[in-house]
Image 1 (tube, rainbow, N blue to C red):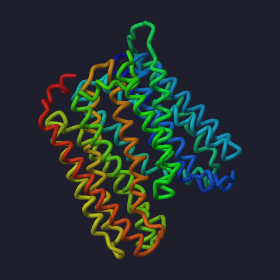
Image 2 (image 1 turned 45 degrees about the vertical axis):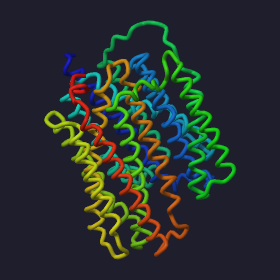
Image 3 (image 1 turned 90 degrees about the vertical axis):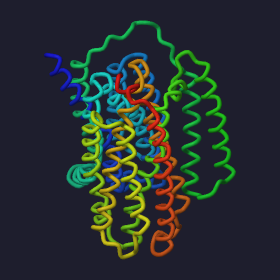
Length: 457
């Protein structure tokens, strides 16, 4: 097997693993009504998704750092096995409590699938090809967004909801096999220092913080017990930062944030992820609650976003060899801003085709920006820090989505129909415009950076 064949096999393996990670959210959401009907435990409905996301948030930077210490192949293998074990157990669940527990296991493994593929791409490709490959990998998310609900609905209706989890097994095994025999690394054999204290305090901090946000989303005000969890999260964060500053091999090296490409990409990624999750949740709500159309039309309104995202990602990859990353990201954010401004002018009688124009616009903008920011982070550091850098980037994006859905929910009316809902959603759309402007302002700082500092990596 020659070098080029091995590299192609690695790419196929990474595309498969990325697809499994990308499709997980949409396919499980589609199956949840049937799962609750079979298992009961409707009070745990949201926890099936929430605990999975919490586990991903926590494990992503951990796997990123471990990949720097022990190599990409080993940590990808461990993460994929954990993900597949969690998938199999989830499919075998007989109660909702079991499903929630097994989704935690699945989410821990998914942290590896969320970050290590991007790290490997940064390793095996030079800058120009790295940008193109990142575009294709990013497009997988768009494809998954289109077919996820369709596949989920088909499996639930024709076979059983259990198989939305079992289907991960053959794909995961193929991905592992291809990667194991095709990716070769030279890892220095020495005793590594694992940041157990950092991992523990980070887990406590994130769990308390995200649980407080979930309560805030439900109660829409800061109560005494929410305040307690926020205090725990703050103390945990302070301890975590102190440990990371003093540690020899910190899980999240604070030195990363001295690199302005990484810092700016992470801040902008946080703001844009806030926008992304709000659009994903609230445009369908507008269609059903304000326009009074059914769920099918909600899917139709959002479909263009999944189609234009891959287009933007591929074009971003091609342009990066010719244009500065700052120009591409700023252009993408302007497109996102235009889409958000369009949402403000939605009215009760706004037709679905008009909505589709703006979701297509915003999808194209996300394809441009996220792809370029990912390559900027990949290219801003050497091999021994690339996993941690990608882990930090994915962490900020995940936090942006978690915080975004909770904070934007504070504007949401308790009345999910009619004028009250229309008014509250307009408030959310105005907030998205403000966030897009902030993301643009932050990203302009990239114009001052010398691009050769990352192109040379």
